[in-house]
Image (spheres, helix red, strand yellow):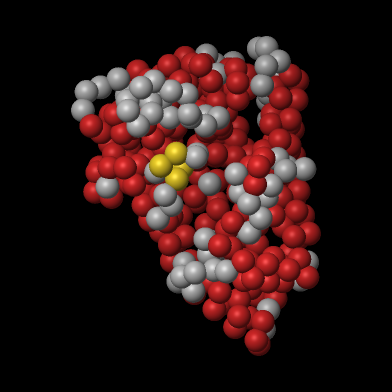
Length: 329
């Protein structure tokens, strides 16, 4: 195995696989190609996709544990298609008008057709995963169900405030489920035993926590130019992310009333954003969020050391965990 970044090593393989999976006639396949970034709005070939993080992890794990990347590829493609389906539906539910700097599917083709496109990607994902075997397909199906349950919990969160512990439960379902699945799919296709699969899932869950909490931190304190998330962007969107789950229980009286009023208002002013950011920093939330990221990334690194990866594989995954968990430091 080369020392190339795993997110780059498998990128062309994943891209080719997704193009083949969506090389079909009809509007839904075209919408799918657009959403993933394989085509632009006019149907011309493009490369506007993301890092293919989850399928790359699956391919890396399979290869380093003694399997062959081609054996896990159908399941890895299925995982990326599931992730893509979830984003199509998330954009509708959150009314987000852009995705990776381009118009979201529902803004171009309407809500109903966007729902159809998401369902279509889900169906293609199942079809692809089945070609990697029943165990791999079952792993992906369970992860998908968990992710959808997490989204349902997340929507209920919009109607109320929750604390850090309950929020992490949502993260484990929404973000952690697909990360855990990525590691487990690689292990399954490499013939890993159940003990190793349990550890791989735990590794994915801890990495998912670190990744999501750090993503939430970027939504409050992020560098707009570097990460596309200007300071306070999640406050302006009234997104109830980890920093809010951490700060709300620490407020009381007029302070808490104003915080709740801001998140209940349809329009959030610059003054409101500045007040919430100052409140979070004054109550020590930023430091606590950083400690939470460190704790979960350290848990992931500890689990990793107990797994039967090669020395080179251990180092590459350690570097990947560090990068994903601390990508603004």
